[in-house]
Image (tube, rainbow, N blue to C red; front, side, top):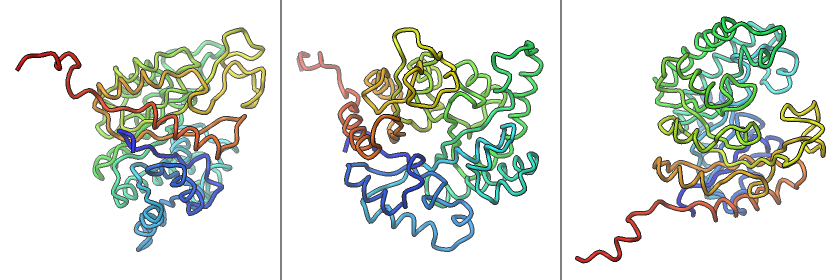
Length: 334
């Protein structure tokens, strides 16, 4: 085992039965899974209403010597503050989508997030990772120009929607860790600070740190760890590549699919992109972060099972504990 537990985020594997994935992940060396609330991996409604469901999930993992430190509610979280349209129907549970009326979807998503806090507590974990959506993402780089008042109103709307959710999380002793990411209310250092300010620094709101979403934007992903050290509740290990020369499609992607040769950037299997993971580990050590390093594997050009095994080996090799004494102490006289 490395200094920190290495887990596999199951969001990109929701098409695979949990038993099958757990057996594979254990064979690759993983210490646990970050369970997505999708497929048969983790069902919030059953977790809070069905006797024995939580124990069954624990037993499923234990059969393969796996633990769980966090669950993911990215998909439903996105619907809380987003402008709802037909795309959301593809990713939301039927009980949240309902008849598709945007106001109803938003309210049902809010209630599902509250249930998720209770489900996480019942599972015995204290972190839920996820998205928030954003009322103002569509106004980014907008014309006609966007008045700052509209952005201010968007952050107020976000706070109105999320504060009651976070109050429940606080009551349950669970953190909601936003994956800072384009399309969310926070997508860089500036907007992360603004989101925290909008929430008056709510105690239950933190971050799921994922450097891959910063690198291609030109955002200082190492500085993020320093600035928000006391808010890093969970860490995703994911790599990204960006071009050293001009491409036909720039940082906005040109409406091209992932994997297209003309993209300026693309997600890559860990160690095959440009993220400085050793720098990240050194900063995590200074922060005394001992939580999981959760591999969110994405690479359009690689078989995912090969990639997941390769990624585990890379993270296992790059992770190391902090020094317990200065190396020069060995020369000190007693």
